[in-house]
Length: 186
Length: 133
Image (cartoon, rainbow over all chains, first blue to last red; front, side, top):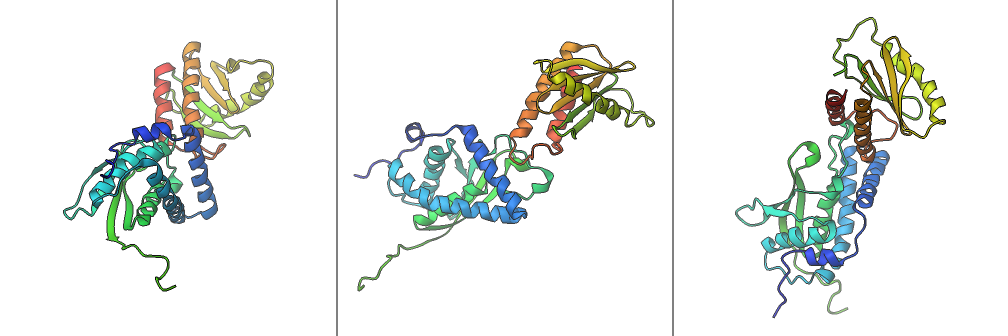
């Protein structure tokens, strides 16, 4: 019998190593600050953050699978729940809620009420187009791609832009069949 | 509430990074820069005094007619030009603004020593001024 997937990441969160939240927040802030200085264009910064997140995500998924004891998800709905309840809790210390499913069950929203990345942050006028937390969308996209799901992840709401929560839309584009890295006859 | 009160934050390099007229008196056209001028003149006194005391709050270090200059000395200087004699209120005001200023500094997108343009900060400072001065 397959082990029952944990419904919350609290236990895992309590057991993994953690760093001081302010150190984490300020470190991330320093990265964004540096990117803005280096790349100058806010659009480029968004792209770069997304790419960095993707690179983190494709590695993080293995850590997640190794430590979280989740079993294979039967559908995208379960995947979304696991990301929101276990994944976010495990690595970010907060849980998200999943809502706004479309009819086909391929598109949903992850809503973060609380986001440790944005403590202290206020967007100045010069950075209005910036998606400060764009790294998160990259992480989700990268992690899902490694488990054969091509997704598109976009921000719908951002507290730094005056909204009341963070809303991350995750859209399943297609399930990629698993490919073997080598051919049988080689 | 004080009739005249001009609050200013001066960076380490003597550049004003935030300024607010928080008094109730209508602004006089002919003395538009008078307040800045008085505060600027007081900077030297602040510098001399800073090494003689370990207190952060230096009250009424300089006078101009009926106006007094009080300073809260962190690495930057919070300066207030005021005509009220409510020392406790002023001290509390400085302490609370200090808290707000720390929050501004912790914002990774704020470059230390640059102008504080946050409207949230501005609103809060004005609210504090109404409450304590």
